[in-house]
Image (cartoon, rainbow, N blue to C red):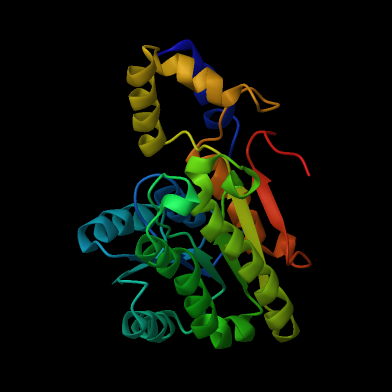
Length: 277
């Protein structure tokens, strides 16, 4: 194991012990795939939650359901195209029919537009990305609102520190995530009187499989090593490292717990101290 990777793993893997912050709560997670989606479902189960697992790929959902059940929790798998209104309505109906309640909706699914300056991105591509990154979270939040009001539950939007960045190649992604931040704020105000909290989580680079492969690609392009790229990305942070998906998941799930019962309309930045407000 490389020096950078060894230093990273030793921080989060050796000190954390799960506690039942979400005991018997029902948590819906969209975008259950590799990386953060998988970590969110696993960590929620370890905290005592039952899971509704949402993505397009049924095989992936079934593998994740096995993990949830291995922690003694229930898992409902619902293959869903979250950009399709009929699919969204069916998801809500199946969730309520299975569990009779919903305590938290985590809008984790996302899409990334072409990495070009925003004036050079085809508008059709921007519209497609916003169907996943903005309109799907909006509609899922609205459709789950009645069930969340009954449980005095919460909605969590997975945002990104890209909203604080002005690099041209990230501008299309920043457009959708910036819009998502405003959506979360508006929903917090609209749904607050019904007892529903709405918060956001903004990670920077998460040290997971997709970014690991990206770092490999950057290293090959620059004639550097993977560890060189890791150090470049970690250097702007106060902790001089990158968060792993489990760390981001645990911070996210705090907002789903009763410890955060008076927290709404907020963005929790989980970036090892890269951005300060």
